[in-house]
Image 1 (cartoon, each protein chain N blue to C red):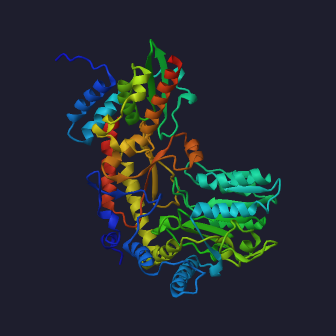
Image 2: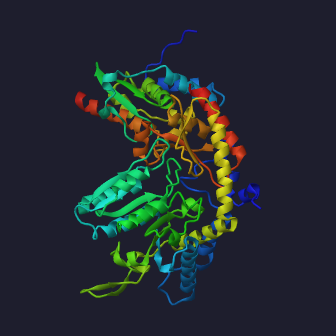
Image 3: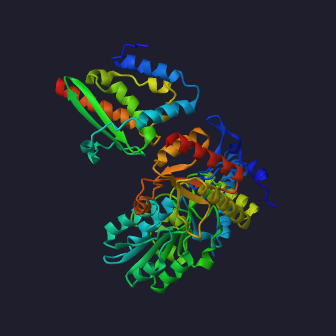
Length: 404
Length: 146
């Protein structure tokens, strides 16, 4: 039985005060808070078995290697990948995307096309623009409608034999829209294009099955799903990962080195040059364990309840406009108060202990679409409560009073 | 009550510190800044150009500088009202001053009026960028005067 008060006890930070007020943390889409179980895994690693992996013959090194590889297996199981070596540890989603983009630069030629969506984060636009500059490929964009839904009939029209890669986020960070990725993947495969899905915003809320989706690449960050910063993962189908050239040169990624020739290591090590974030990987595994113990069905159900409650309450505030009104969305609400700059509202909310994000959320094209400088974004996690939402609503009313 | 208007940067800063010391909590401080912000526009539309925008602010901030009789005059504006309030305070301190005095001025008063959190260089409101920009103008005009 899900009890939010019990859950909150797992998160030490939730008891602290900010500006003299109890912290209300609604910036979960930027990064989640960490439960004691994950913090303990980090402390345990550095206190008891810190050592470099895959190298030493000594026991500590073996222990660290085992735990690190165990984490890889946990991630494999969580995403239902066929093989553990299809899971590459990276420093996070951005690194994962760049790894794929860099690999594709040797596979693309002039006139090839890459499709991205209008809902992308900057980190999802820039690597593809760079890739297009390097290869002469062309970038096409799936447009969205006023609700923040991607227009699938337009996507259908963009697909052709020239399409080599489709790149879409599973869930939009700025608006919370859940994109129809299964449809997008299937359609792309009909023209033999590969599909990369950015799951950074999805993984805190749902459990993707990469085999059921038949997705070619799927990427995520640990820190948005209760894990530490600086670690993430790239899932790639074995065949694709074998096809892509290594991303970085260094230790770990080689099989044999002479001055004439280097042969690369097998997957996954081919893409894991240098000493990895060992502790981060292990703690990522602990985070996945933690979330699965609660259960993603339970999390999704509870968060939808928070979303509905918050949407209802926020709509009661006169002059408040919500951006992103898709029927399929996760617990993210982007909004503005009429005639008031989002930055001003965010500043007042902060004084009242409420952490929200303000600005363009690294998704300027979306803000341009709505012709606004930015929004205030409140994003909820399974450890948030309805009474915190009440605090938010009261704080917004106060901000409105002070600022208008 | 008649009060002699402060003239030097230091005196103006002390005057502002006095004013802020009367506020009991953040609400009164921020309400005052918001009211200062509402009292402006501070800049003529012809100067609200892209080249006058200060980078590093989440809200847009325009600053225009003019030298008259060896003194530097600033006008500025923003699309966010709290930012405008902060600008109003900065202009009161730094406008109508000699470039040399602006360059040498300390900015400790910001901490003393309880706006320390706006001073962090990583905070996206750009107070640090604003002060830097005002001082850059002062340095540029000082070079002209030399």
